[in-house]
Length: 121
Image (cartoon, rainbow, N blue to C red; front, top):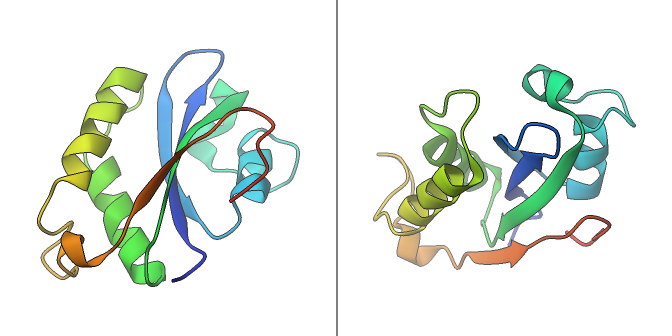
């Protein structure tokens, strides 16, 4: 298994969501919240962010990127948490995330529901 995960965070200010991929979730969340340099431009003006869910179990970075792409594909700014969670559910149930990805059933994914202050990855 790799250390790469996909994650869903929600703006505490606007309620909108953001999907990303990282190998260090606590550091990446701090970047999104402006505590460290390097956060995504798309999240800058909707701080602060809180963690919602992380997806673990990818065999490598490529699989995590493929899942993130499917999860976030076509996601415009301003999506609600319910819409994001429905997209996650759809992504978890797909046969393949992309035409080049492995069969989803061959990747043992685990969802971890997150809370603010939870520093585990």
